[in-house]
Figure 1 (cartoon, rainbow, N blue to C red):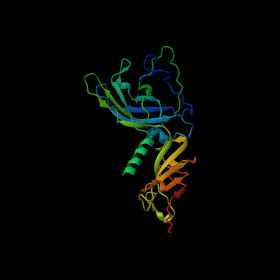
Figure 2: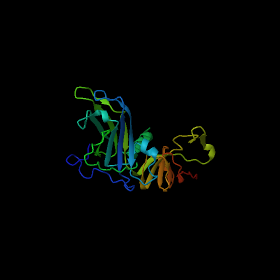
Figure 3: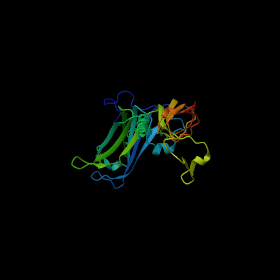
Figure 4: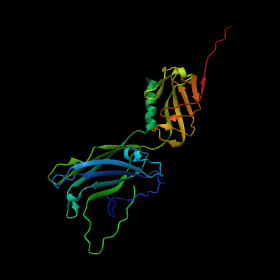
Length: 290
């Protein structure tokens, strides 16, 4: 995992982070050993995974940094590992334990295609510090942290990234977990998606839940539900919630026995739970007697 000359790091191993490379992600694992740790019995005090994305100030919040698990279709992901309070775990300048980080990349179906299958099934039924050189003859500072890093090459898109971390105190001992397993969702943006829509003519057709702050239709059946195809330009994250400021076209047909008898066209809305503004066209048949 190290980005040193001579190992499997083809190209730059250090990311450029200036707030303009939105496709640059860094997975950061910070872990601290307990004060009572020894080379024979090291013990983990705490650990946490962080996700950094190179966006302009204010675009990637502290909450995103500490809790986000979403990566938007990155091909290369940087990894930084830092273990603190490790001064008791060094022997002749090297740590006494063996690290093992296992990255499992699992290919999956694109979200919009998965939504389409579901629809068809329904139809069918930090700061930097300056480092000063040591004075001539001065002893180097005592080691207190261990770090490593590199580049994770993603071969499947979209994919789930499962990370398992462990350590082995010595050759004749069993390995132990450094922390809980963690997964990251790596999926890009899409130009289209599918969903459902229910026309509402008056406020009485909506049930408001003041506790959860949600609104749901009073009646849902095959006569008033539409299957909707959404188009997006520029592409969007179809898994995200929130209002989409860019108007996007929609088109849909009813779930009734004759889908083409009811058509919905033109719209604009929010993602996941959409408020759609459109025109419903209904085809009727008139019988003229003699």
